Length: 135
Image (cartoon, rainbow, N blue to C red; front, side, top):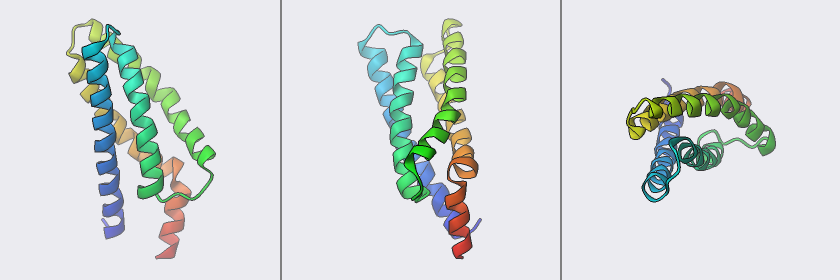
């Protein structure tokens, strides 16, 4: 792995950890202080995490200068699939009495891997190609 790619992966991991902390923190607050079922707590915490992660990774990891709206629409398309699938499966697991924090951990790991691949090869592919051409 080239040094530039390693740094990109490292930045993505660090921003994803910070987004994960936002997601875990907001989920824990909602679980502890509200009577919301699993799925709205998960959904709210996921949205907060997505907003932070997209903004930070666009600016610092992928250094994307293209149209923000286009990038946001591409990310929205990813989450139009991921969100309902993870919400429904998470709700089913919760109803089967699986620990809600275990469900959250599994969905966060899935989100991390899939989002990195999607952002690298779909959302910010042009940015990656432009950076590769410079070297």
